[in-house]
Image 1 (cartoon, one colour):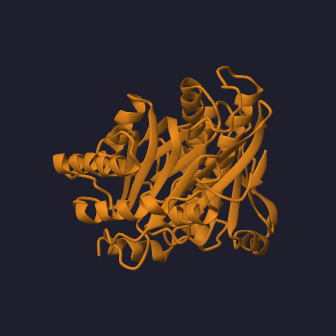
Image 2: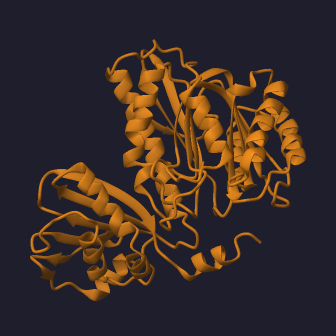
Length: 407
């Protein structure tokens, strides 16, 4: 596998664009489109929040029903959530407008929205945005970057990644873009994430690869413990790489699965590290747990602890908060047997063992915790299962951003 430059336009046959439509924001790109030259097999996962935005319902029904798509239209600024029948009608109207201009069926158009809950979309601006996006579609890196920028809300930077690998004698590419900074606590994926690939793969195996990867990538991040109404992950495969169709779990399938995992992990970590107001990516690795599920629960319990997140912001080696978060996770373990380690580019240090703190240097610990990425390892000494979760520190700026988000 080779890491390459790009995002959703890296795979053969995919084009994208971003534009200003003044949906809510002024003087910035706020609408994006992804388009494939040929129809794609589509797989996706969606929010577990009972309150689901209209675009989530629209996309879910197409992906789980028809199972194919050819274009995605996304707006930022207004979430089209809690908007009733009118909001659902706007999804169809958006898809019909794009479908007509692109000359594809309306139910081949997926839609996405992110932003303020409860506001109705301004359809005159959505339609005008689509009319600007279609002629701007391009397969260049710049076009993909502009699409990634257009879906941002409180994100401080765009998030995209691409990789390539060999399958069936052909070069296959997987690329993706995502947005997410606040209201991030997925139970399926994240706010919005789109992955494109030119892999020729069966619909069944595409769905299996996606559903199997999400639990260890997007489901393992949290910024603030709030699961969004709009969480959507979509993967489109157009088969244009020309490899023989992958219909069984062979070496080519494993290569695709590894590429997908790298793309998803990279995008998920980028969102966690770009949490609203964050100054550090907070990574928690649980090793030697008794089961995989328990390892996941333990790791997420630590990254979602507000007290631990605040300690990371203060560069404070307050290991008691980590031990406490492990203890209330719901997983049973013996605290006298575990070890806790802090780590970063500045070094690695053991801080807790045999039921008590070890003799470590607070000065060294503070130095380690002052890096842009902070790592905690919890060795449970119960088995051989492991899991990693990603979050961020909790800062004053998180409150500032969310105190007046609607305005």
